[in-house]
Length: 466
Image (tube, rainbow, N blue to C red; front, side):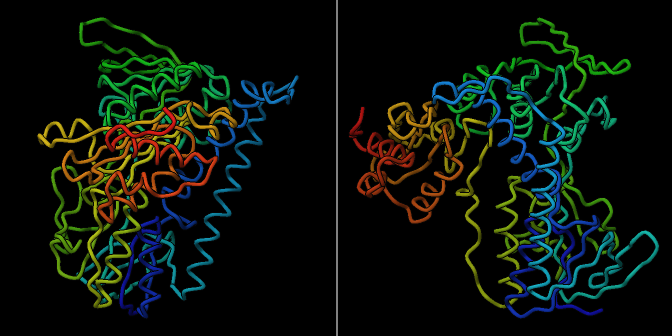
């Protein structure tokens, strides 16, 4: 079968790229090795984790806050099997939605592993068959997979990745988590909210180290209230298991050793690009020393006509980053000249509660570059809407240029900041000043008012409600 474009991988990068290609009149094929579309994000990542996070947060609120609202839950308990069932239903419905979009846009979907034969020829290898495809252009969107420890690989039973952690047979008594980044903290939060003992071991001295440090400190304070124990600045020295018990040892910077035993250990030290099955050597597509496919500024690989997007190339491993790249490649293939994605303004989010979101430069980065800036912050506890919903933890911080007042970075921790961050992204895309945000009317009472107050605080300390 001949196509204008063949896309390998149906995650948020691949399926969005396919839709945009079809919208622009290209005959499009989408190749996916799994039986359901949506990639890691929809099947074993973003969507199922958020479903469990919401369920566990409802339980935690019922246990800790509902009485203050006059709602009594005298015999509160967790039906974990039902919680997993609901999660699976959310995933199935979302994946069906992607399949519907493929049919709607007349995109041909092939189930199997896409393998390069030459620059334009792909073989789709299924269990009992092989099907050749020809594409004038090919887009690699195969995503990433969990990174394992070299001395303690996943056994998928007790030493587990995020995939297994989202479908445990029952609630753990003690979940060990290696890694204080987004994945480890989100999954750790699920089980802590449900009453499980959770211990997080992180080699660096701060949680979510890629964010502004103030966010990591505030998040640690908040999550500690749920019972999560943190061992920051601890290097893992040993990990093994005996029977159904996992044994972990770690050492602090001053040489103090800690030993922990749990029934599961989630290894959440990051993800690595997934491209091993593509037979890239046959077409001269090169990878860097971290296994990422090398691309130029047009997202084209070292072989003309073959493109790569998402987790499999350099940059943050975020679903929305992959989607933006997929749209850009599609429009470029159609002969348009779209602006390149502004990678500096792709927001990053951690979906714990409180949520964490950020875009632009952190204070640490501005200091390293010797950029003069002003900082303004405003706490959610001063928001009437946050008080009404008992969501007073956290703050929003706005960083702006000391001379021009242009917003350089926005950092948030608090309720629904994953949604509020969009205002900061729009403002920074249009190079708004902090005063611009401060002069825009925000509905009252809303959580978004905190964004306005933080912007006013950064503009000559003009916050109105502090």
